[in-house]
Image (cartoon, rainbow, N blue to C red; front, side, top):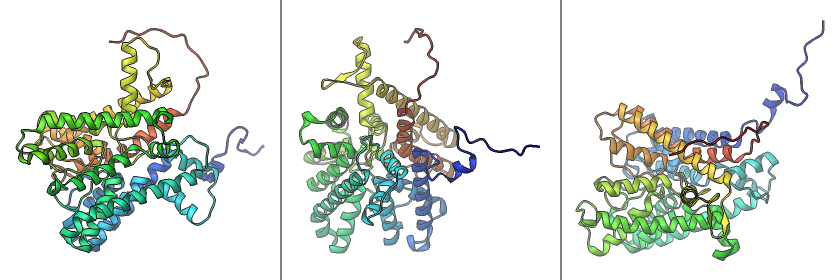
Length: 456
């Protein structure tokens, strides 16, 4: 009788597969790394030394999830409930979540003079959404230097305002916390009213918005600007991201001014000069920054819907921001316009957008809409006593990892907060995983005859 032997031709045996160091796909490994960081951060925040009076396990995990996904939704006040140790844990989670664990892993290897294998390089490259076969460790070093330099500069500038108000120790910590939170588009603040006390302060508004706009552009765009130094020589992706960011920021600013100018609960209650600053802040913070200088819950219906749209779009690809991403939004707009004009491909800046990119853009939008509608549907069932608009707003904020709230996050039950945690996690990981899965060609072995389908 012949003994059974596993077949190894063409495929790895199960034992060999289990021995492979990179047996999971890059999106799965990235999701696992974020989940691990959330669990570790939650346990640290659960320690008695992390808070005054202690946090429940659910509160600690929600706070850690919000920090790692750089969202900013909170169930406890960060400044008054958490101790200095707890605030430091949140700050580290924000930094790790914003730049990505793979970035810090590569940076550590670079600092120790080590080498990264092909599997590790592939994982870091996928985490950074890079297709360039160049040395990813050099890219990681550039990203780290850029991020730390901007955060340090932001801290020093903000200290000019907050050190005179709070003293050296309190002012510097307040400045550092908000600079890191802003650059990483986290939206965590140390006061219950976020930045409402400085709604008309020019330096605070300029530095905070500059930090989260730059952080939300994406490292690909920033490095492209640094290397090419001329707008005409930028890649199509960089041009689309910059153009989309400018249109959304300026358009949102003008619309916010028009919608809220006479609202006594928001802009109408401020001096005329401060209204322009507050409207600008309210227009650009939904790109997933999460800070607020006016009462978000007091926004009128048009401004609320505008904010939800901006949260859904989010920031740039490969950035500290989330959402469907500006480039995705621009591709969908351009392709829709091309269809209306009877063109085969969307074109801009003398370049045609690849058909595969159009398919990926529509897929990301469709998947995101389906997820949001499902989450909002479940929340309405779980929280029938709350306004559906507030629940939908909270869902958009969680998925876009924005952090803006209409004041109901802490009032949600454990199942409702669990839904928001899932949205935050998927919002931070999902679009990247979708793009990765859709970007990998899987050519069909059989080609079928095309058939027309009536649309519209």
